[in-house]
Length: 97
Image (cartoon, rainbow, N blue to C red):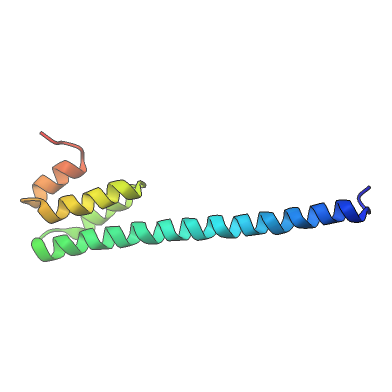
């Protein structure tokens, strides 16, 4: 059966489709990682300009720990409107009140 042309065709098609799916998953993952990195860099850039004396290295570690891209986008917005580094860190840690 393994030598059957139909069987070989099915196996070959499965390999091609599997490879294409893997490439697409790899691209999607790469796009997401790039978007995460861009969001983190943008947030750090906001703080570098708004609060020049802020320790952005400490913030970088906190931002890199966030896996959710939507959360990183929200954090970027919060960085642009935060009244102080302290307020931002509280919002980053989930302390809203």
